[in-house]
Length: 316
Image (cartoon, rainbow, N blue to C red; front, top):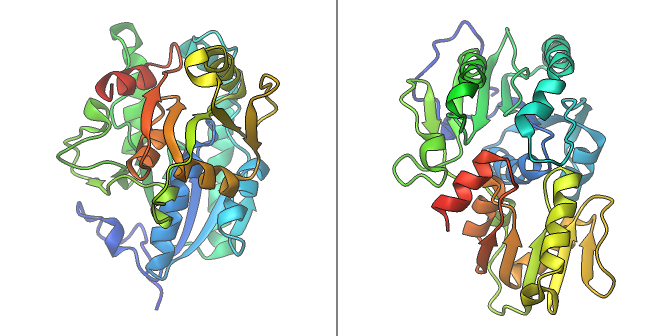
């Protein structure tokens, strides 16, 4: 028997993930790097274990990764948001320069969602930080770790826009613990429609190996221009470069002589499970992954990305 969460139903303030059973779910991750894809792997595992059908709307690049873990998953070709990063650490300005294109994509996305709901008989929408991925006909849940954005005083308007979009969703699932919060102040909320569902990681599907064989592993993640900067910084550091494996998924340059694993996430997973030490950006998805790994960590935040700077500080 299928569960249908229609708009006409009473929206419970206690809408938790355990209640989602026998449901046709449409999920879409944000296309800001691949961290949102990574954490959705663990989430999909959980949802499918509760006899749910999960359909994923995403880009071709995201499908290629999901397909390595779920060969039988159904996909809908769905364009990402038109982000463009200059690599100078001024994320606010980069987003501002694309604001018109982003707004147009959000409006178009709202129309696309309604057609997906009808065509695929969707009962529930899950949006991993996509502001426009919601429906007027079935319940829509926003998934995030940032209920509060780390904005400065003069950027208050950005926080107001964020809160406005969050308010348009029926419920919010926060990828954190309610009492011991990995995201610190970012995940704190007194909203009545918030549920803390705990951290999610693709490494929850693996048993931890007994032997750590790899000295240093660098995860070069995020937008390519910033991933390349991280590779350049770490590979020039003799503390790590002599026994280092670099993991990345884009068209990036790694110095000759340094081992690299690209493309295949399952191969990268096998390497990370054996790592003694992990060097990475302090993205929240990576922090959740590190909970499931036995390695020590060095977090290097992306300059200008205040979320990562804050997370690196509280996890130092």
